[in-house]
Amino acid sequence: MSDEKTIICRCEEVSLKTINDTVYQYSCSSREVKLRTRAGMGYCGGRTCRHVIDTIVADLNQKVITDDIQLSYRPPVRPITFGALGGVYHENESC
Amino acid sequence: MRMRVVNHPVLGNLPERNRVTIYFNNQPFQAYEGDTIASAMMAEGIKTLRNHEESGNGRGIYCNIGHCFECRVQVGERKVVRACLTPVSEGMDIYSLSVFKKGSESHC
Image 1 (cartoon, chains in turn yellow, red):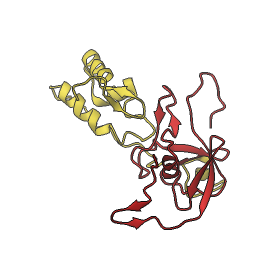
Image 2 (tube, chains in turn red, orange):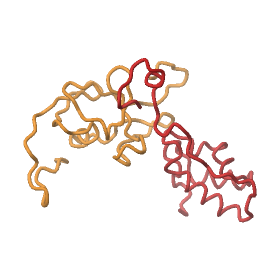
Image 3 (cartoon, rainbow over the protein chains, first blue to last red):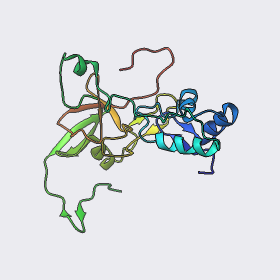
Image 4 (cartoon, rainbow over the protein chains, first blue to last red):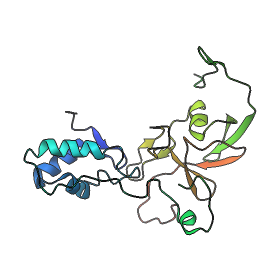
């Protein structure tokens, strides 16, 4: 993970360098890194990189940030079309 | 280099299945019934199923179990499905999702 070009968030293509810079500049929590860099906001709902971001930011911020709320999984668990949601038509593979 | 494993050391030979023609970006491809879109395209040597909305980088199969949505493709007019989970059917029209052109709103 030392290579700063490593992509952390695959959906939004956020690299380790971007995250490191953000934390150095704003010394923020993982949630703020997400808000600033979109890491963890991608199509997969943060499933792939959520934990990685938490770990990286926790390492960088040695002092524990008290109000650090964990990055959470965002609903819906699977994307769903408005058609399926609104009952206009309903098919099983509704993504 | 054929990507499809026709005779497998453990599973033996691939059972005979009838062929299916699918269209990917208006190009015909051969597949077998029971293939998923992702496996059929990979067997035909196509690994780039879509391009990233921002950077345009080629994307394809990543988890192959319907979890990561990297393989999402557009089927038919406006339905977007996961290629790794969707079985192929005869004459299926598949289109790859591509870069969002700035200021264009005609994107499904």
